Image 1: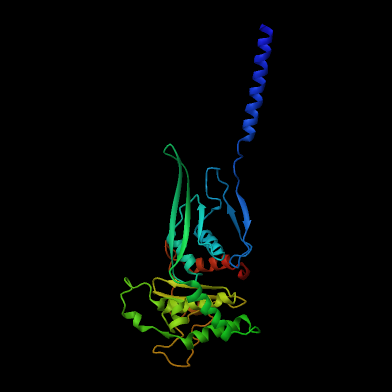
Image 2: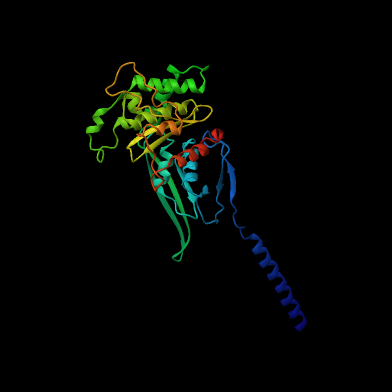
Length: 314
């Protein structure tokens, strides 16, 4: 009986070892990061990292982000899919204002940004923090921006035009069809922030604009023809203009400064048209901001231009 009991205990021990081994095999393997390749019109061919996260994380698409440029780039790519919210993790703090500045340089409409956070805890212990960034347009992008821009394309652009010819048409028609809205100068801009003249729709629907309206309209038109273009904002000047790729290199255009005040019918100026950086700054009027929490320098704009439109990189 003693020998049988010893044999039974030995068998149970072996079974327990087998069961324990099986349990360890059934435990979920640690998740690993996964690289995906972007195929949208923005940053075509760029790669983003899907973060490998523990099984308790409910969100299925979470990206591992390095900095504000990458977050802005990812948000632009997802916006092309009509996805305006992205979830991400980052080892370093992300500036909402800096991210906003990068997005504002590409999107041809006003928007608000919302930064959210989701914490996973266990017994008051923080296990992981996820963040989310959401773009919230403040205009009807389809009806007030992109559809009117496409209508302009159908009216003014022909299939045999070169990129430079299309840029000239956009520039000229913006001047011929738009008056600078001097009435805005009398508004309290700390209170009024949704005036049509600040938007591309001011140009397309009301034929009036201030600098941001001109610049956003130009960006919308360029987008319809897949011409790389950015909006440059200078807080120190309280002014905006465009950086556009003419097919060979990046050049500066200031549509606002080329539109005479008071408005003169059929008059188009080319003083600030397709200029290099040195030419553009030589007037002593234009100046870029220095890099800051909510401002971009000329180098940061150009670096971001290469990321959004990699085909333009020298």
